[in-house]
Length: 132
Image (cartoon, rainbow, N blue to C red; front, side):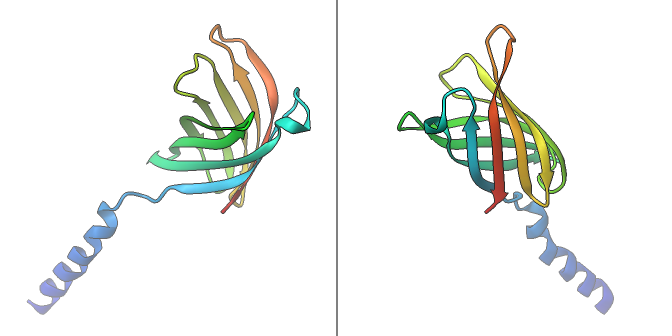
């Protein structure tokens, strides 16, 4: 009886850990916009929230032409080690941006591309993000 009671208590105390939502992961660094010169480079913060194993909602926060911007979308891959790809867009835009890169020890190094409404892809620059 004691063993059953102890086993029940261990199981019950572990339930909140199983039910808790996984914590978002924040990476910080910078982006380079290759066609517009150094005044179009800037700080970038990315917040990744787990959806399921290997899939994340993502929001990129940055300043563009002195205006705060947030692009949101979906990323797939690893935030620890491996490949990571995704697509993001601003809520009021028809076009989107894709990114594709590698994560090494939590550091993302990626390229980003403009994806036009008609499916045309144009290289736009790079992203480097570190664990915060």
